[in-house]
Length: 80
Image (cartoon, rainbow, N blue to C red):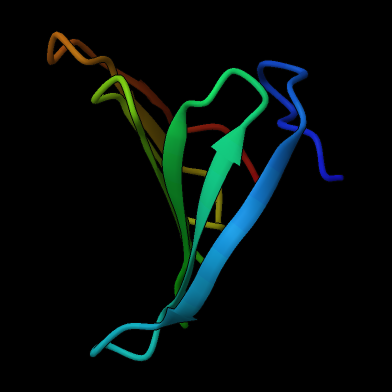
């Protein structure tokens, strides 16, 4: 069973597919029962949408953005 690198929880992928933009996604359910979505985009970026309302975006080339469920944003412009 895969493990979330941030929480350490194992999760099951319950469904996966490709959206209208051609990006792949999967639906994940963690050990605690939390649901999330992971999107892998054709441009090399990826995005997480978590059950608590928080999101994480990584451009694949050094930029990342985390948004909490309260709307607070943390950005990183580090190198790849």
